[in-house]
Image 1 (tube, rainbow, N blue to C red):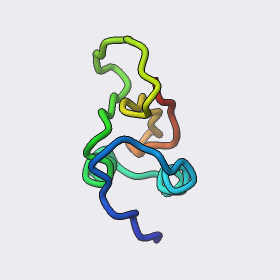
Image 2 (cartoon, rainbow, N blue to C red):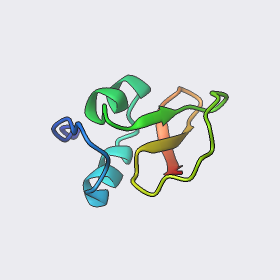
Image 3 (cartoon, rainbow, N blue to C red):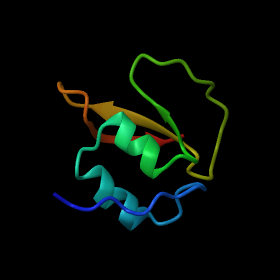
Image 4 (tube, rainbow, N blue to C red):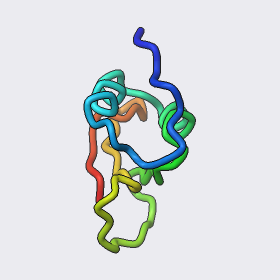
Length: 74
C-alpha cells in the first residue's frame, strides 16, 4: 500500500502526485482527508456546473466497491 500524500488544504496543483493517489483507488473519505480543499462530487450527487479552471472540484468515477478509479476536474 502506498502512503497518501500529506493533506493539501488548497486546490490540486501537483497533478503527478494527485494521479498517483487516485491510482491507489482511495475511498471518498480518504480523498476528502487528503484533499480537503477539493470538492469531491460522487456519481448521483448534485453539483453546479459553473466553469472552474483551478482543480477545485473533482467528479469521481467509482468501482463496484465504491473506490475512486478516476474522474475529471470541472
